[in-house]
Image (cartoon, rainbow, N blue to C red; front, top):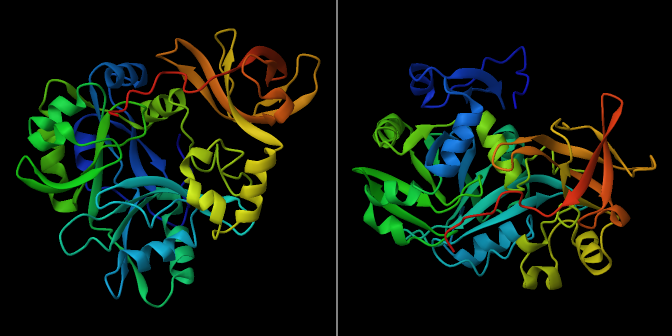
Length: 382
């Protein structure tokens, strides 16, 4: 999970850095930040705790920003963002959230992001964006260069972001803000949590029911401590975050999706609503529409290995007779699955569930099969 830091730049710290250190976390460089990869109990325990109880994640390294139109119009700001992403933004209801991708002109993915229509009175024309930590500066520059003069991007570097995930998350949050018990999946609310003003969405990156909480940086440690005080809640590092998202079959930017992959190849057609599929009007629309019609030449698939040895990113995928058909983009041991799992891109003819494959690890072919995703069932609050 660790990414090398640039030698000429010191590591940044999130507003919760001191909390991680105090809780005994092992810190590593990630996306330019000093981040907790695990706490003293270890990745396996953290993974299982999140599946069984509630895990607390510091995701304050992510980029948070608002798009605002001069005339305050949702239509104006939504059309501006629709020129950059393939999601239907115009028809978002206040407080509704969607997952989408910033696309290059050739249909490759520049980053993936979450977009929410703000619901606060007087701000229903604003859009709230959350982008990946490693890409936020590039994303902001890309967006700003392509916005009409009537729309502006407002970075919110003074916000922290905390995720609470797992089957106990709803009860924990409802104990601090009762209305959150009934918040629907992919909806948000501006609400006071334990006396602290927050923006809370019912979403996350683990496949579990849970919430993401945007809070002023100065209030983040107090909120973190209040949540950690609950017996069902434990802090979780980047290591378990990665194994949880892999079991959930969710993409990690720079690995499972990047500028060489399209949303169709990545299996993300579900994130492009019908109107946008038909009308186009976003970068790379001709390619995306063609691949929807005809199918992509390669696709992202789930893979289960037959033994206990995992295959990591970069492992070559072949047919049993040695014909190369693809490459692994994410892989590791799945604690919930109790075995090694992977994702990767394979040619269309090798993509059917149940297809026999070999994954080449240190020169040795390991037997595997294409498997349905997610590997661990999603338990979102529908």
